[in-house]
Image 1 (tube, one colour):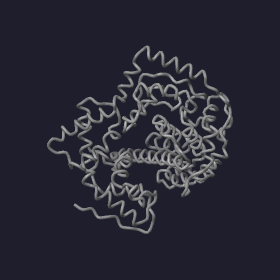
Image 2 (cartoon, helix red, strand yellow):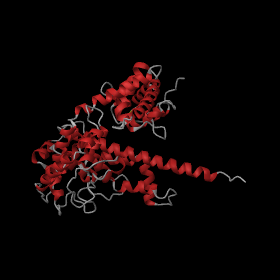
Image 3 (cartoon, helix red, strand yellow):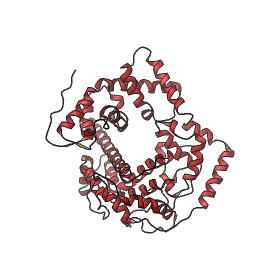
Image 4 (cartoon, helix red, strand yellow):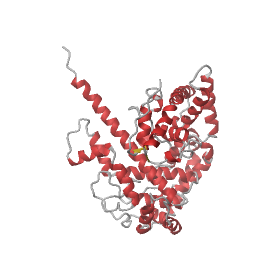
Length: 453
């Protein structure tokens, strides 16, 4: 059955909204690639819709955040035309997860590992048919072989050796004792200059290179090691480490024995195992990583480096991210005096247009009883301290780049990471608000029904 295209309007529409509407129009077919509310999963958009269907590199007119009517119709059509292959992709993904469980494979995130493989299978074979079980098993074995032993299980086995653990612990202690704590701060003027150039057609600034040459990222990291750092962010109401540690001074990293995504501590408080666990879990191309012994050796040194990073361009991006984070003001409360650059205006204006933010703003101004035990109020509170989630996600992303030796060569590439993290945090908050509202709605429905005699 053909699905009619959306009527056009003269207004520019957010690309994410166009994708969401087109996806919902596909119906229940790609349910395995969707969230509980029917919208595409974040990884579905990131790994399938954008790179494999929209292909912005070939269609640069669809790469913008906001699309005019013609571009929105083109994007809508591309997704709807891909409905059959997306439904087949979802069915392959369901089969691969079932086969994965049968084989006892637990390493890695199935979405990261299999989404694009499933799209390839759907394009080549259509929906799973006769012989699909054998194909699924072969794909899973190929993914495992491609990892070259770079798995969480291999990491756990490597760190289980008592003598190796003792040696690593001694190396961590020695490296930690050699640190130099300096209660200084990076140049706020240079950071503001870089952030003010963001969003322009040529989002570049020589100030970024100047900050890298002068080691401003390392300076911030050493300042955070000091028990009494200087006024790093020109704000007394937030911790200088911006939630990257739960302690006043980051503790010495331990070796560790295990990790769970549900209980990961703040980035600077993670063990060696926890740092590498997140890298291995998120990696879609593990063959590009060093071997597990080399990963461990490098991470031992990295964990004792300023900001837990080796590359200075990535450290400087932490400085820029901190400056951006302390000026984030989704609720438009006007409490921050730091959000005066172009980067702040871009991110804050985008955030304030969010329906979930508008609801949180109303709750802040005129709070009402929360029937879900405070869930909505907690989500509103997240918007009062947006720097915490932002910095945590930024550090994880930069850490992944550092492990892969993927430096940021200029301000434009740094802005791409900073802006991408802001979008990711915003989309995550939107999803959590929707989940909370669905929970409240479903809980209220039985209460409205009349009781039976």
